Image 1 (tube, one colour):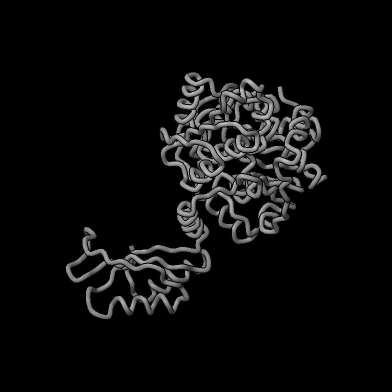
Image 2 (cartoon, rainbow, N blue to C red):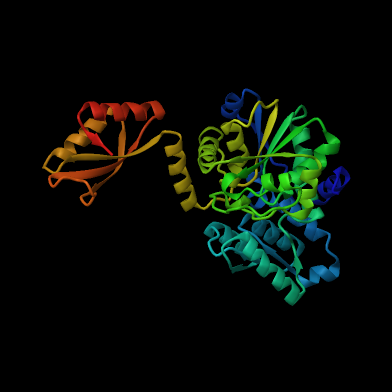
Length: 398
């Protein structure tokens, strides 16, 4: 089982390769959980996530014969970029299989680092099948995104930095997909700081670890329908599972609303751009995973987000935070009625962002029209104020 000595060896290999990412105090999250919370900003790592650490360690330890055959990987984006950059540094050829709907910026970045990208399947698990077939057919070495001792050791170097940067750390909260990052953190801290509590976080719609830990062996996730594509892994890796199960690490889940709210808070308050999977640990702290002893270190695992996804997530986060209200209002289908509604909304202090008409709603009267309006508000209390004022003015909602 990977241990502290392996992680320290990996740190020596990564000297001058990966960045020592900063930590940043989050007052907003500290207020939310009642303890001092620090953000470990792996979104600022080279290639935009922690994945370079494990990929480089694994690839640097290949024999000369293996390096000559090149490498192959499967990833939704972060591991892809980590492998591609590591291959460029080491002078290796790399082929990366990515899901057909992978984020375009992640595909472009992987290609820019010099890897050949093949788009296949609908998930990382399906892409991994193609990567294994390619490895068997060509002799290329498969660089697994999480299920290898060297990868786990590389990811564990984050824990060494955390202990140096926040010496009195009491709790570390870490996102989990296949488990490589969490296992690396556990492998290091179990010997270095066994007093530190480690909490793993999965998206509720892509959660394989809770059932797997309960069963005592890897169990497939019942679904993979989450915006957090970076941790949408269907089955835990054998290597990380043994470490996490062996140390009885607790794993919690967060909803899509939790993820979007956390991404929004990190952007607004910490001025950090992260992807949904990168915000998972922050989402757990915001959602309230129980009393946390501080200082707490939250790992922001990646910042590679598609701008189109960012737009959707921000909109979702605004709605979840009560900052964005969509409602349907029935008004008379007469000239001036819409103008009156908009004036009423303006009087509430709401900012109208979009208006549309619906004349085919089933139970509308002949002389009625349904107006669907999107309003920017100042929070949940303001939303209630807008609705109360409209009802008081005689408007029929819904």
